[in-house]
Length: 64
Image (cartoon, rainbow, N blue to C red; front, side, top):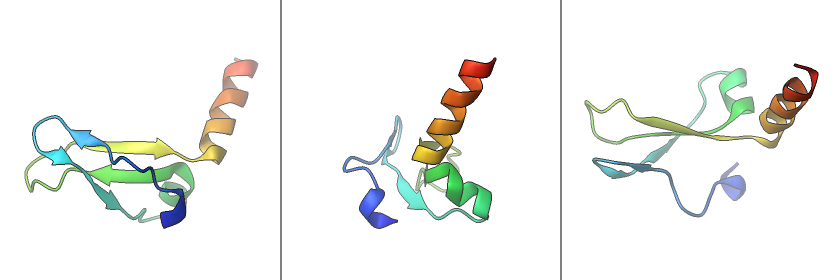
């Protein structure tokens, strides 16, 4: 998984670089790479979508 992580981590606007967070379920892991702010009270998070999720979203867009 670490080989697929982005070179530049997502940034929290107030606290800087976010930390990689392992998915806690198979679904979260399938969705992609999750990042969360390291500040204890900050709830900022980001998702870098996986290729599987991106493909599914494109398919849904075409059929909608």
